[in-house]
Amino acid sequence: MEVDLVKDYISNYLNAEVPELVKRDLQLNTIKGKAITIVGPRRAGKTSLMWQEIAKQDRRETIYLDFEDIALKDLSAAEVLRVITDIFTEVSGKKARHCLFR
Image 1 (cartoon, rainbow, N blue to C red):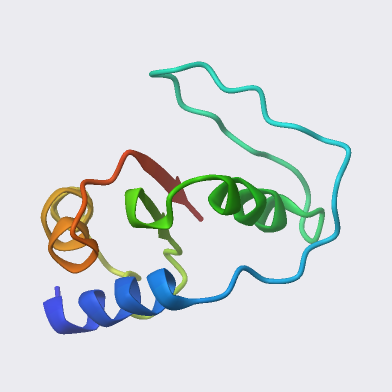
Image 2: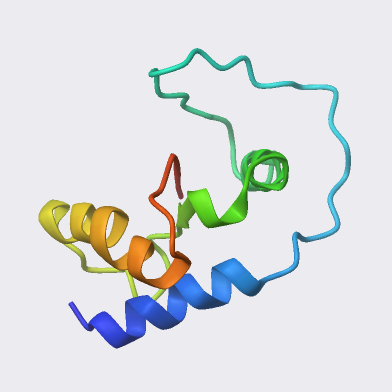
């Protein structure tokens, strides 16, 4: 894992503007301590729905990992855990309370 590349990815995410999104009628029902899975066909708005959830949270406590990004493409499970627990905390200054994966 190239740590500097991952740090740049996280820094870019933290400073990125939330994309302009089409408001959907769909709302995610969350249960504390439980994972949510968003499934659907391509181009159905899954990523847009995730960005709407990100916009509701403190960005410095919400990590978004896009595994299609070159910085994250070949990470092992142990490296993903390190990104969430150590590297994100180092870059953001806070622990990740919400994890979103694409």
